[in-house]
Length: 72
Image 1: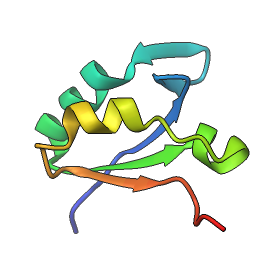
Image 2: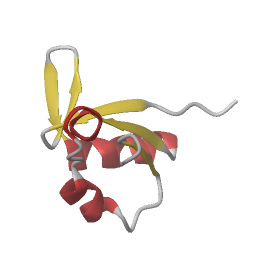
Image 3: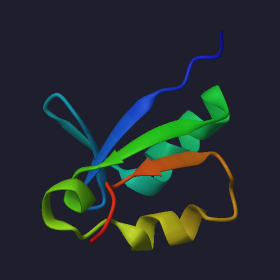
């Protein structure tokens, strides 16, 4: 079975515990290591404002599965 990491993104950062990492750099690292990354965009979920600028910079790399919840 293939493993896929879950990355929480908030304010352009990947957050985990008490740590914050640059989202673009961290998502690239995870993508290289695992092939795919499941992204839970907390700004999209809570405020309907996903971190689109981050994903646009990575859009040429088809390794992200982004969840920011459905829109009205």
